[in-house]
Length: 115
Image 1 (tube, one colour):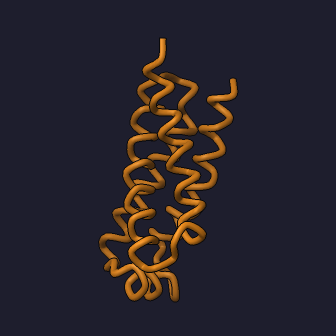
Image 2 (cartoon, one colour):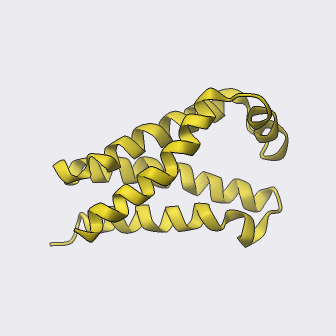
Image 3 (tube, one colour):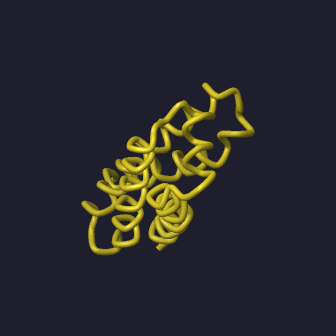
């Protein structure tokens, strides 16, 4: 039961950011381009991966495959996010949320292989 709640938590935290990246409205697009050296196409790809990965985590109660796909997608995006935060000079404090979500999604992924 706790694993499904963790997946819902991670999915709810990620989906909002993913949808914002897909919209790429106003300052967010410019901020990403200048601060993280990411163009708008790369930002939209990250938004798609975050949104679809969140949906898979929401559907994780249907089977391990949904959890694995969603956790892999989110782990990939969060790994890049952590790297970009450190590269931009934000340090641990700037990447804390991405690290937390990366850890939770990785834990969900590894839990699916436990017997």
